[in-house]
Each structure stands twice: as C-alpha cells, then as structure tokens.
Picture 1: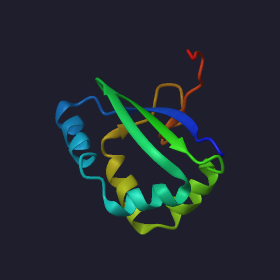
Picture 2: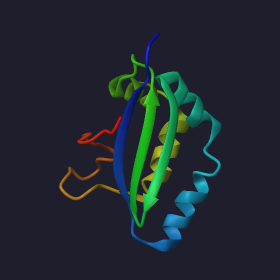
Picture 3: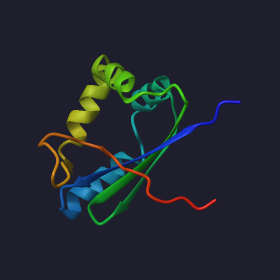
Picture 4: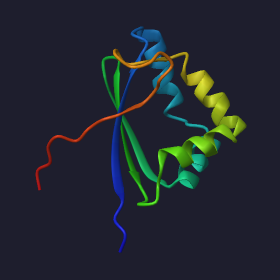
Length: 113
C-alpha cells in the first residue's frame, strides 16, 4: 500500500488586520475549481495554520505528487490563475527569498514516533 507524503510550507501575509481577515474569509469558502485542481495534482488534504501574519500549510499528497506537475496544472487553469492573483493581494514573500516567491518548502528537523 502506498503511503501519503507530507509537505510543510510557509508564507507571510501582509501584516494588516483587515487584509488578514479577508484572506481568512476567502479560505472559509475556497473556490471549487481550486479544490478540484489541487486534487487533480495529487493533493489528498491541505491545512493552513496562522500565527500573526505567518502561515504554515501542511499538504498530504500521493507518492507521485510533484510541485512541477502542480505548477503546470495551475498555469493551464484560468480560475487558479485568477485565485493566485487575488491571493497575492494578501500575501508577501518571506524575508530572504526572491520577491514574488510564494510558499516556501520547510525542512523537517524533528519527528516523534
């Protein structure tokens, strides 16, 4: 049986309470096309957590999942392009990464079994 693969990513929001509230409101009703695209890419589940303006996203994926394949699907989906453009109003690159870069893959440094 194939096990799922977990990825953890982080991103910052623009540190403005009104924009953070809007961002959270969008994520209470994510557009159906976005969810379908995520599933088509091999994402089994996704969670986003927030502390102040820092976000942490946890993805559970199929073993075959790849970020390159997801990016290809995203670039060919008009609703995903529209969503990402809208979300960029609320998001900002993390310190130390190229401007315009969004979610950054985190390195696992500890696990307790």
